[in-house]
Image 1 (cartoon, rainbow, N blue to C red):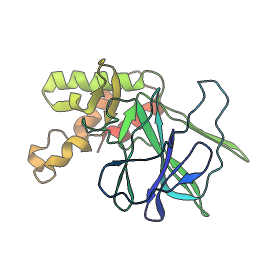
Image 2 (cartoon, helix red, strand yellow):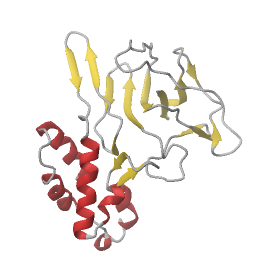
Image 3 (cartoon, rainbow, N blue to C red):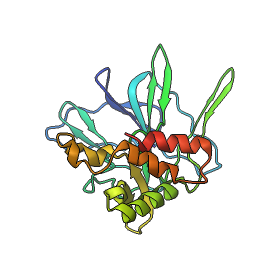
Amino acid sequence: MNWLCKTARCPAGSLRADGSVYRPDSPAAPQTPLPVDCAIPLNTAGGAPVVLTLPQMYGARVYFVRDDTLTFYLNPGPALVEPAFATSTDANYGRTWSFCEFTFNPQQLYANISYVDLVTALPIGLTLEGDATHTVAPLPDGAVQRIADALTAQAAADGQPWDKLVIRGADGDVLRVISPQNLMAPFFDRPDEMPFRGREFRRIVSKLTGLPPDLQQKVERFLVP
């Protein structure tokens, strides 16, 4: 796990495993590897939780990766360079990772796992304990595979690049499904050439039969631009 802070109100920094904050100096060149290890190891599934005391932060991200570590870089500023989930040349491209947004300031404690950018084979859920317990469940087992299968089938049916939204590892397993905006962006000035539309995504989502209602809603929010 990596806990990164990256906004103007929260200077570039990363939380370390001992709870301290590492604030890097500005590097001399772009794409300079982060000079310290800021990974926070987690215990195995079912093991004891890893407890951290957090400083206040704005616009942070919490990154998770399975059976690996993530590679981060610095640009002059300093500015953190985060993993690019849709860029095949990124050092983290073939890893199973995901993230959630996080803010803890005097006004609020806020976290977001709404799947705006991608859904992955690494499910993330949240539990907030206090006067009451609030839980946001992760996607159920097999959900990402089912989404990928539906998009791949639709690509075969109509020739549109739905399958390009599915990113697979070297072994062919699904790592993540990315938001359509990543393929639509080059066509924003040529809307008539755009490869797919929101209404078509709704039609595909409707074919994902057998999904629980809450998952159906999550998938539709993710797929419909």
